[in-house]
Amino acid sequence: MCGRTCLTLEPKELESCCKYNKSGQNKPKQPRYRNEFNCGKKYVPSFNVAPTDVTPVLVSALHFDESADSADRLLVPMMWGMVPRWHKGDFRKHGLTTNNCRLEGLAFSKLYGPPLASGQRCVILCEGFYEWQTVKPLKPSERAAFYVHAPQAEKVKMEDKSTWQLETGGQLQLLRIAGLFDVWNDENGDKLYSYTVITFETEGQFASIHHRSPAILETDAQVSDWLDFKRVPANRALNLLQPCQALKWYRVSNVVNNSRNKSDQCNKPLEQGKSGDGSGKSGVVPKSKMMQSWLIVKKRKHDDGEEKPPALEGTVKQELKTEPVDKKPKPDPDVP
Image 1 (cartoon, rainbow, N blue to C red):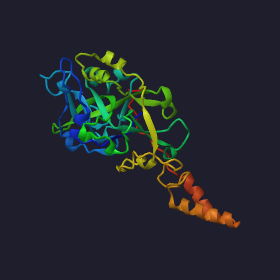
Image 2: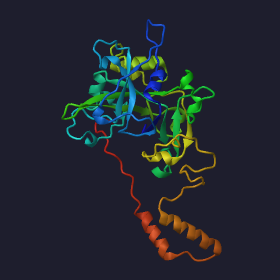
Image 3: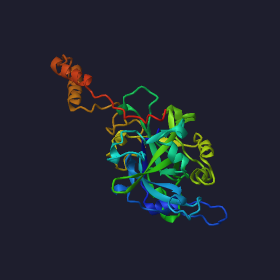
Image 4: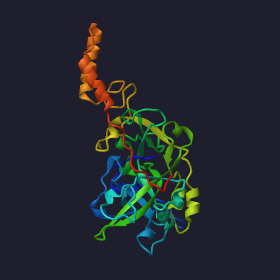
């Protein structure tokens, strides 16, 4: 599963980081950034990219230029969360969860099958993605958050952009994730490009964190084969998607839980011995101010050997009982 990513590079920096070798040419090529209106939605570099945000993805240039070579590439900003091409009305209200699509059954899906058949394959770029440990029975607010990234050169630190040395030709190793994109038209004829991340069952060490993983393309050859839909047919392209063998991750603060938190604290490694909630203390700090006050009083009364205040305790118990249950979005009915 992939529910949050990190991409802080500007378009020019992305062009530099996405150089590729084309058959018959000695000099590496650089994909051109092609801006799109996307119904007014723009790409904004962020430490906490969430679904409905716009990020640049790699696509074959042939999708935008009939005279182009299918091996050539473009960087095109698209919205995360595929909007069904048949949807009418507000693009934000189609009611389906399309941030990720399962590899299993993808080709037969009414939503994802047509883009796959049309060769609308893309590569989602990010410096890393966030994942929450779901293999343990914990509430969402208590789950450990991790930042997952590609292996880097020895001196490169993912949380410190000054170590990337992009201005002097340094090459940051981005994660490249296989996805599909589609085009939706509003009533005025404006286009919105949107994408979904392909996922499958996790294998290896990452299974201790989450049971599903994004389909990461580890080699340049895999990226070329996934994008070049004229040379590589859909069934062969799907067979390219295999569990990633080289991933790194470290725990981060749960400040990333809130998609409105876009600060550089999101991908900072969590200091050993500190909790993930940003409090600097071990254990979980209650969200409710009433609960925090009650715990402070309770501890003081306990230390002094006094009785617990029953009225307040009853109020807090009632509050705990009425704590809102996590709401799950409506899934895509075509995808298992």
